[in-house]
Length: 41
Image (cartoon, rainbow, N blue to C red):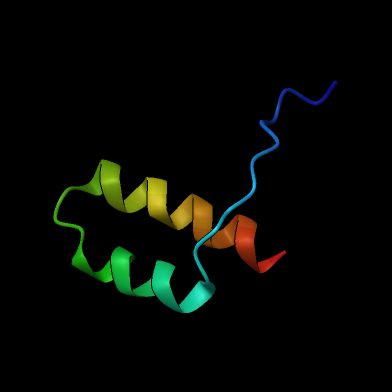
């Protein structure tokens, strides 16, 4: 087992980029950034 969660990301890449730009806290930005990178794979 790799230890990585297997989740399905419903948001599109464009939506994730928009949400990422709206984040004011680095922790929230990082969470959206990780979703964005997983979506691009």
